[in-house]
Image 1 (cartoon, rainbow, N blue to C red):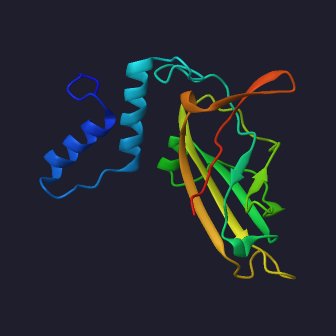
Image 2 (image 1 turned 45 degrees about the horizontal axis):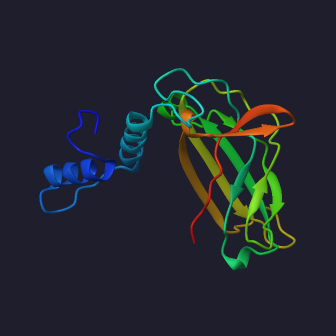
Image 3 (image 1 turned 180 degrees about the horizontal axis):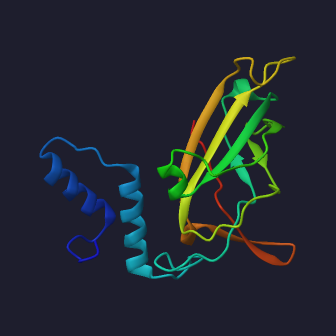
Amino acid sequence: VYAGAMPSTYDALRWYEWIRGGKRSGVTIPAQIRWVAMLERWLHKGSDGLSSDPMGRASPHTLRSVTLGPFHESFLGVNVAVSVGLATREDLREHKVGFWFPTETVEVDKDRRLELRDLEGAPVWTVNDGQLVIEVRQIPKGGCCNDGGVKLKLSAWWQHAYLQRRKRFGESVEDLLQLQLSK
C-alpha cells in the first residue's frame, strides 16, 4: 500500500495471504488488518478528519464514556458489574493492565445496552495507542457479583488519531472508544 503496488488494504492483504498461504488462506492477525487499513487511510487522506497525525505525538486524551450492547435479551433489566481497564503497550509487555476504574454496577436498559458516563479519575494519556479491557459480570438476583453469574471479558485496541472528538461543557475532549458488540 505504501509503495503503491496495491491500491487498497483489501488487495494488499489478499496478496499477502496468497503469498504466505498459497491456495489456503493464511491467518491474518486483526492488528495487521487494522494497521494496514489505518496506513492506507492516512496515505490517501493525510491527517484530514483525524483528531491528530497518527505518525506524530498524541495530544492529551482521556476516556470519558463506554457504551456496550446490544446484550442478549436475557440481560434486560439485569444488574451487571462492569470493570474497565486501560493498558499501554508497556503494560501489556508486563502482562498487566495499568489502570482500572472502580467497578460500577449498572442495569442493562430497554435497548439492551449499558453506558458508563463521566468516568472519574481517568488518567490523561499521551501515548498513541493502547488497549481497553472490559469485564462484565451478571449479578444474580439477591446475590453478589462473585456468585457465578455470566461473565464477559473483551478488549479492543485504540489509536489516538482515530478517536472521536466531542465538545463537552465548552471544552474539547476526546472519547477513547465507543464499543459496540454485535449479536
